[in-house]
Image (cartoon, rainbow, N blue to C red; front, side):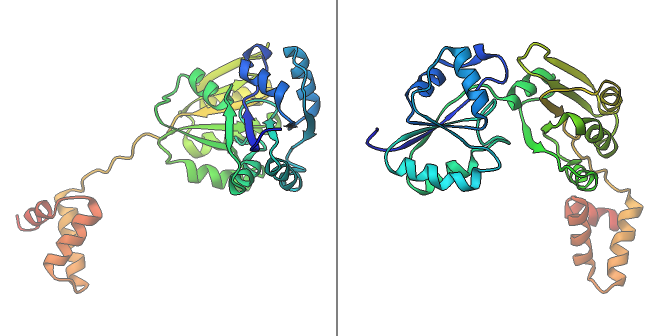
Length: 279
C-alpha cells in the first residue's frame, strides 16, 4: 500500500493489443485495485499482454458508476492505488471515469494517467479533414427528434466535429447530418480502428448516408465531419443603408443615433454609414 492513494487512468488499446504501452502493463500488474468497464475484456487483455493483474478487480461501468464511485474514493483515501481501464481508449471520454476523477480530486487524491490510444484523435488523423481545431461531440441523442435538434444547433460550428455512433443508428444519424449540414459537407466514417477489419470511408455526408444505409456498417464507429465554412457578412447596398437609417429616424431616433445603430447592426464603421447617408 502506498503512503498516499492515487488514481491512474489507463489508455487501453482500441482493438490491437500491440498498441498497449509498457506503463499500462506495469500498472495493471502493480495496482492494488483495477476498476474495469468490462472485467471479461480486462481478463482477455491481460492474457493477450501476458500480464498478471496483481490487485483486486472490480467492475466499474455505466450501470454501477454512481454507486461504486464512493466505494473507490474511500479505497483511495485509505492509501491504495486504483487503476481505471475501459474497453478501449481513455476513461472519461464517453466512457466511465468522470465521476471517479471528480470524486478523487474532491477528496484531495492525486490523479494521473498512463496515456494511450484514443479513437477521437486516431479517427481525426485518418479522416483527411482539418485537425488544427476540432470539437468532440460524443454521441448524438438517441431519439430522432432530439438528434435533429442537436444537429441544427451544431450546423454553424466551424471546427471539425468528431462523434461516436452506434451501428444501428448510424444511417439515421448520417441522414440527419446531411439534411442539417448539407449533403456536400465532407465527412469520414471510421470503424473498427486498429482491428482486422478497420475501414475508413471518406465521402460527402449525402453519399455517406446512402452508403451506410446500403452497407449497414458494424463495429465501433467514429464519425468525423468537416466544420461549417466561415460565415460571411455581405455589405448592404447604399439604398438599404439609407432606408435603415430613415426607418429608425421615423421611429424617433436622432440621425446620429440611427446611424450608430445601423453601423453596429451591419458591422460597419459609423463614418462609412454617415458618408452614405449624406452622399
